[in-house]
Length: 363
Picture 1 (tube, helix red, strand yellow):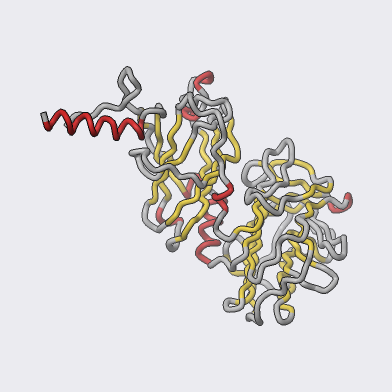
Picture 2: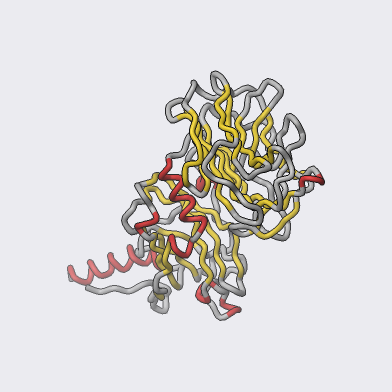
């Protein structure tokens, strides 16, 4: 009698986790890609596989928008990861582009379990909490067909000034033509005392003395700026007690028609650091906290001069209110530059259910 009671109790508890989904697949992060443990890190999951096609296309996903693809922390499917954003889904190819916030991403293998195949899910569970870790603006510039300049944080949305949709490093990107004065205005809501600016860039050319990637600026010089000069060198800086800047003295030279991951960070202890593809480009010593006076932030333009515009593509532009560590930036670059190297899609597991839809296990 006790044995039957235990089995029934286990049946009830297990059914709550397994009832809805038909399948799950593990995604393992490859240990060499994460130099140290990162907290609340948004991992890019980018996979294309027949299992993620819809049922109508001979796959196992039920919803045409991929809304029934949900991340979990374990194969028990008992603890959902609510901090995720489904950026792109293709029902006919099985392409999934999703950002999943991992509470502790370590240099040991860290699995994410994607569950799917639940016909009862018809709404997008994506959440702005994916970007709760000090992000002030996250601009995927996604789609590649219709440009979206909103921030995934839910605040500091952009206003598009004629930037067009194009192919990107991840999903779509913004196509900027300097001669046509195209840019994205993020208004005045970004005013941190420390900062990290990052973006993927691919220049058609460098037509100006300085070509703006992301710039926060006003007439009083309360700014942070990431430019690429006409010779392909970075011009990075911000205003703290006084201006912190290096202008063309970095170790990297960018070429046109090539994707690069550019990052600028500053705080009152580490100072200013510029990065190209996660490698240090140049540094300047700290001098107090950043000036937070009201200023506009633009993607692809200097908002004060109204010129110095970008000519080419910009993707995944982000601003955070902290200075990210070198290891965080390296992990971002490894993840976003080569998702197929960063992570491994494991073997699909079918969830076994009985006629009632319950998962049965008897000891």
